[in-house]
Length: 459
Image (cartoon, rainbow, N blue to C red; front, side, top):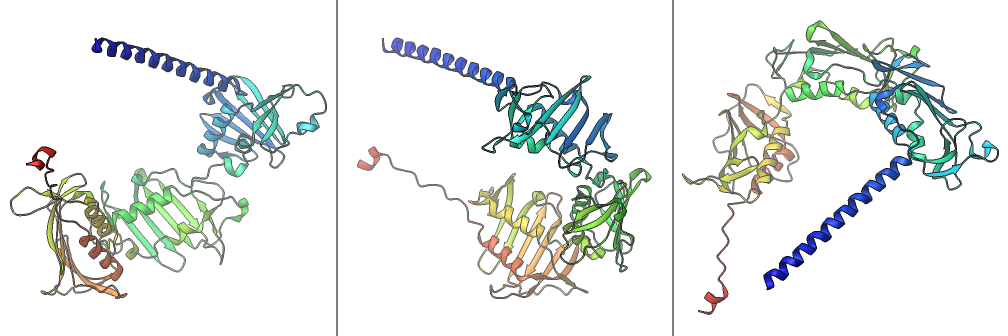
């Protein structure tokens, strides 16, 4: 009898759930319909072929699409596709926040006698228009209407601001269209004579200095430089006559297929945050943020691989170390899980595998500040040593003496990597960080003691 009653209750719950779900879906459909009904325009952004933006603050801007979008007035330029996509999305979704109706008197009361913003666009062969005027009394919305004879309504101030694009916002800001993987070689020349010339080794991600081929170039540093150059954007546009006459920096790029690209820049004056520059892909000068220019290398030494760990941290499969207080060996078990190795037994999981990953990241990101030539052998009595082995069997070993926390100067260390020994100078704070991460690697997680049940406790 109880089973039958439970089944009935269960069926009732199912019916209630189904009714609630249907009501919720219907409510969502109604809300969607109401939202669509509030839209000022119904069109697809892909169908738009012409746009005109007229603002009291800016000159008339005309854009046309013939395969791709371009600005035709007041200058001829490619567009900033991100800005244009956002503009069309706002235009498609702009809503009537409040309907006011047909104006009964002077449009001046709404600021629509001389609209502060007019947006006209051609879609599916038909011109549509949005006029926007003054703010409403509380300042949250703008009065607007669709065309010269339409009813008046409110649009949000945010939509107004997003549609009120100026020429600087809409014109192309990308300096280059190539991708970093297309670069074969590059050369950075400074006005004082400093020069960096680097070339890719075939189709690999390896690079060599053209002037000092014996140096090991860091692929990460080259990739960061090329990514930064690829994503460089103009912060502003000075007058066309403002091209740098005597550039302080010239960056020449060789691309696959024989194409080339060039950036020329003039160093900013004291206190200036933007620098005058030109790109071979743009017909006018631009202003760049100075932080990128300040990061450009003056010599090839700035691109040399000075990391303590060349292998990718994810490729390391064994970590073993010896310090004054501890010694242990870890093995990667799966992904970011590590286990401690004790004899021939399988590795036992450690409590905090994040410490092992943090150690590898620190080694990969730490750079030495100098190297002795020739390198002396590591002292036989060095208190600390660390050895890493990657999935390809490549071994990296670091040896150093204990460092006191109050020591602020550089520390001697010996690095054996890629089959060669180097005697290095490393910042003490970096060595102390490695010491700290090694000490934070916890021992094996111990199995919890079995909990006695109540019955056995009474015996």
